[in-house]
Length: 533
Image 1 (cartoon, rainbow, N blue to C red):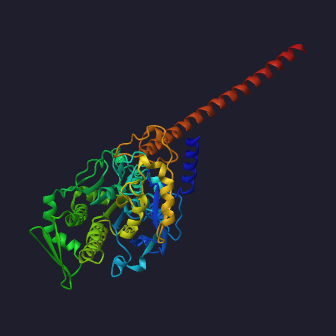
Image 2 (image 1 turned 135 degrees about the horizontal axis):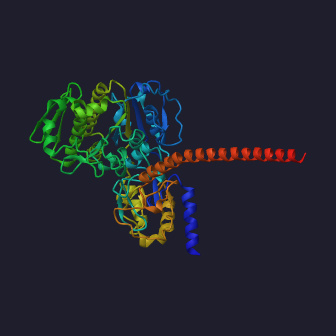
Image 3 (image 1 turned 180 degrees about the vertical axis):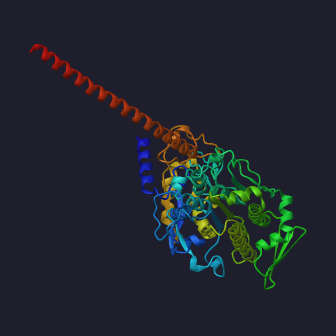
């Protein structure tokens, strides 16, 4: 009876909070700030000249991109005010940028992120961290569908820590890159690059899908701890854009790279691992290439420069850019968020870093527009910084949860109760709700009971939410399952027409035979009657 009651309560909890809860991934308790800043969207290129949006839902952003690319939408969300898409003059390249941990205040004096073209991205699911929100934007569905609730989470059943975008924790929903690749049968050039593996995976082609297209030009790259730029596991093994640490350092020395990333009037020198930048006012900032945090920032800029240069100069990539099939390239600037967290938003280091990112984006748009004949559509997403809980708020929460939960400093805004204390979830939740500061709110959830193989999930695995039209019990990857389903459906349709045609011919023959038999019977009857008279 208790089990039935627990399951019933779980079902009620899930249905009540279906837009803010992911079973077996969200925390037992979720802490939300009263107010949070929205991310911003900026549209560049002639394809967006007549767009006058001021606000848009996060799940609608992907529909803008698919609209201008001439692709089917990833969801049923309608976006009003979009220009009519011409099949004869659609963009040959869609260029997608995301810049992590950038607030509206950071963009006050920006040229490329100007307030006149700023579109506020309204969240339809909270909370979301940078990886979760980026996944929502490029898939057009919320975390209760794609399954990425955070960069990391705790499996409530086993208590193990899980990392997003490992082999078994990929997104359960198709993204724009996958749609472009599948729509053109693997003929599009798809590139995704970031210092962070999770960010590159979020915007790139699903790792389980890339292996289906053996000769496809699919490139998903991230920066390794060694400083090398290498393909992510499962990205079809394409290494044409790889760089080792020595090659990265050689590029930093080059004047061509410095001109690519430096705003007008700025100068730079690189000596003994120190990249020294002087702005037009004489202010100086130094970036230590040998220090991981700042070195990865420079390496991320090098990756963008190298990809753009390769597309411009390499014959193979020139041919891909010259064909009639649209391409999709995405760059995620994840390293700047680390600079903000360590140095602060008001530091010179962050301000210099943001200026370099802006110039890199502008140089990329300009140079690739030249390669693609100005037929480039560009979207830039400035992902708002995640909410920072104060020390007082954290201390208050810690005094309530005690030792019954995982370390909340690592999991907030999610609070995961330890498996052995699962019966205390209600008590802990009530205490938090009754004593939480007024600027915060708390929601409590009950995870469904896993009767089969409960607790057998490894530290790197978690139950992956399956789309409603697929069978998750088979263990088959949802992307593969979707593609196989489409192929089976097409084969069934292909068989349907010959069968109908055969039935039609057979029915016609039988009908003609019936008429012939009737006529023959009438003739024999007539002859028989003649003989009698």
